[in-house]
Image 1 (spheres, rainbow, N blue to C red):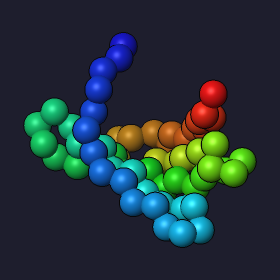
Image 2 (image 1 turned 180 degrees about the horizontal axis):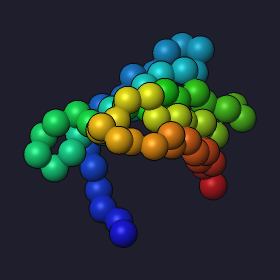
Image 3 (image 1 turned 90 degrees about the vertical axis):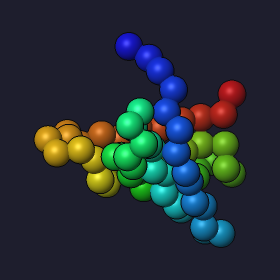
Image 4 (image 1 turned 180 degrees about the vertical axis):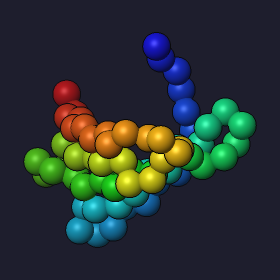
Length: 64
């Protein structure tokens, strides 16, 4: 399964922030807390708000 979602993000000077994804009907339905790592080449994220019944989601990303 794949796809593309739109959304917004905010990043604070300390490297923390949020990402909010918008569902296809235009409703913001997933918000992640984020923090940059490894000199801004990495990202940690955890779902802080989602649709009813959402499970805990977290992940990492690394610039290659």
